[in-house]
Image 1 (cartoon, rainbow, N blue to C red):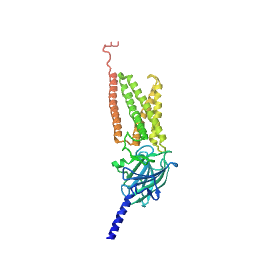
Image 2: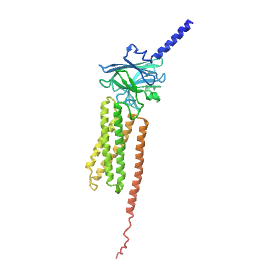
Image 3: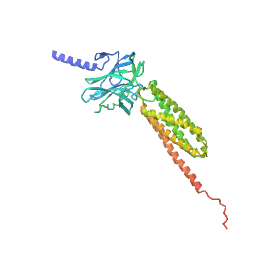
Image 4: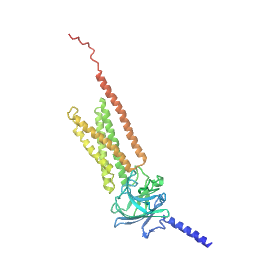
Length: 391
């Protein structure tokens, strides 16, 4: 009876200790390292232990979680630019092919751009271990900004890793999508972040959203509307000169709002050390430059019968259509970066598709009007008065 008792007791004790690895109450010290704080994170059965060294501006962390499978991965990240996955600077741990645990760093520019590489801030003393289905990541992080007392954190677990060490996609269940939030490094309090969208988030996220809305309205909607007005309404004599003033109003408004959006983008870039979206940024600079040149077209516009009007038209139309294409392209690039709820992308797609359909309809109507005009001119009847015969 006694051996059975001790065997049962030992089994219960072992089970308790294995589960204790995921308990802040019983695991304040990990591998002889004592951490000042521990948080039971609100999703994915994960825990974070940390100590803040304000004098060195460093954060020592131990992230503890169960991967989705025994061959899966776990990840913990700081996002210096937002409160979700895009922009996150991630530590990812998994089992290598030889069975040892490795930690890799990934710069996550967007959901479609996940690259292994150096993070936006320095990281040292990275290591990981695995025991009884639990993985742990250890690291010391140099905080992105001096004097930071709170960070946006993102954590995740995944099912597998490819042969070349690239983590497979995680699940998209509510727990996975909600695995993010704000962490107060001094008080030890953490809050779960919103699941995504144009609204909500911290002040930096709001700036990103404002930047996105300004540019979507200017380059993505107002500018195309101005192009449609100029191309199609001027075909109707009754619309002259109203079409010109409507066109000028839309384009000048688009430029003013676009400049504000461009300025917020520059501000966000200066605050996002080490995180750059090169394609989006380059297109934005090109848009601003071309639009500024285009504004001068208002002051350089020659009269209709001037000999330089033909060349001015080439310059004005060429730059205008370039802005149109680049503007719409960059709105979609921005949506990839912000990764809002799908309804926002769908709303823009519906809007731009509606404008495209309207343009096609007006194109057909305009050509019909022009062809009728040409036809009426070529078949114009002669004067009914009978001409005398030549002598």
